[in-house]
Image 1 (cartoon, rainbow, N blue to C red):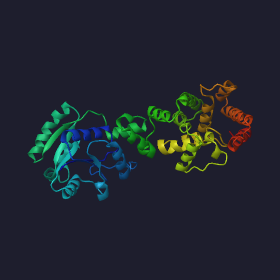
Image 2: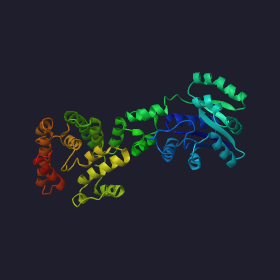
Image 3: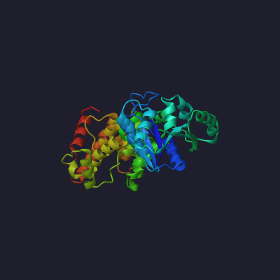
Image 4: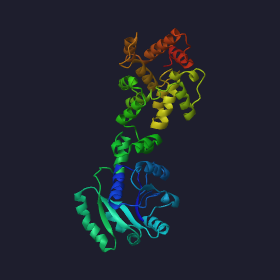
Amino acid sequence: MNIVIYGGSFNPPHRGHRAAALAASRELGPDRLLIIPDCLPPHKELSADAPTPEQRLELCRLAFDGVPGAEVSDLELRRGGRSYTADTLKALRLQWPEARLTLLVGADMLRTIDTWRSAEEIFRTAAIAAVCRDVGETEKLEEKAAALRRKGAEVRLLSAPALPASSTGLREALRERSGVGLLEDAVYACILKQRLYGVRPNFPWLREKGEAMLKPTRIPHVRGCEQEARRLALRWGADPEKAAEAAILHDCTKREELTGQLRLCEKYGIIPDVAEGGSAKLLHAKTGAAVAEAEFGLCSEAVSAIRWHTTGRAGMSLLEKVIYMADYMEPTRDFPGVELLREAAYEDLDRAMLLGLEMSRDEILSRGETPHVNTLDAIDWLKRGNG
């Protein structure tokens, strides 16, 4: 049996790691390609806010999905403590005494592998395959490979597409809403969902995912809402990026009819009030907020703005007002009084809120329906000068 072992911190696992695994699968033809995230790296300390070993294991399962022969192993997590390669190879040799073992490493690791703990034992137990990103790097490593061979190591150099991905740089990029192109889509989604690395959503990615959840006819409204939310946020001192996040996802569950809304309520533990229980229009604000938080990792302020964008409420925050107004008066809206609403929104936000809430109340009454109590409470709150 031919077994390739690929270990590391995978913090996070990126497309460079996947390219190395694909190169090993292609050039070495293993029966098993074991991806083994470490528990504690032996040569460095993880930051205090790093994902847990279990979270990195989950990310690896997503990152290497579909790589021929790849299996993600929790061997080092189960062993605990510092994850030394020699210990892992020893355990694998006991499990598969007749197998050919090959240790897959990056070019940087090859340069230092002879300084690792029990390096000679590593060389006796497994062959070494190092992934080089281009011809120039391969030529530079030939001398190191020759030196290792003189020490008894069996070394082979593999080639993989050049990917400018360092885990440190990628973690920094994620905090700045970039780096998404260096991750598998499922990995990025999981990082967002679990709010790892201080990640903030990449706007093109968020728009793509958010719009995929909408009916095509609603997309112009959502784009207009984002545009208006950014402008209003800048005008009144709210965070324009949080406003954009909330605007992009504010209608993410709008296409669901009542039965679908109720299923989402059950999934996310939402208990509708009496009015909401029979209204998909009212429920989409609650379910959309739940999806934005649980599936996209939006911050609490943006989630709350989505939650209250339909009815409003007493005690609304600045960001909640911005999203309420942006939804109401974005550029594609066309109804009697919208121009007055737009003018007021940039002169006196609370006056515009009161005007918008009263227009909403009157429109509901004109249909013979009862306005939601939260809308009435918001009107009363603003009339008392509490905005």
